[in-house]
Length: 126
Image (cartoon, rainbow, N blue to C red):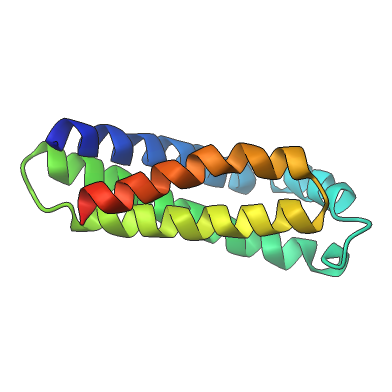
């Protein structure tokens, strides 16, 4: 069980730290792409603040997941990993909502697998 916990938490850590830091280090590129992506949606005027919020949530999710993987690996509590999986689920719901509103149904469908992994993580870390 600990191996599955470490691998799940590490995966979520890598996923969200990379995604969050990409949004930090290439904010302008992400903002430009997202502005076009949401240009014909009701969210068009909220792209910049949404980018800030999702960046923060992803970095928190990734950090908690990475810390959780380490803590489980050294024999400690799965609570940080649980919090990381919970924040991962929140981030994925936010991303899924945005994709659906932008009518990018294929992009929304891709997120389902990640969301299921976050749910598995919640189960494993309970």
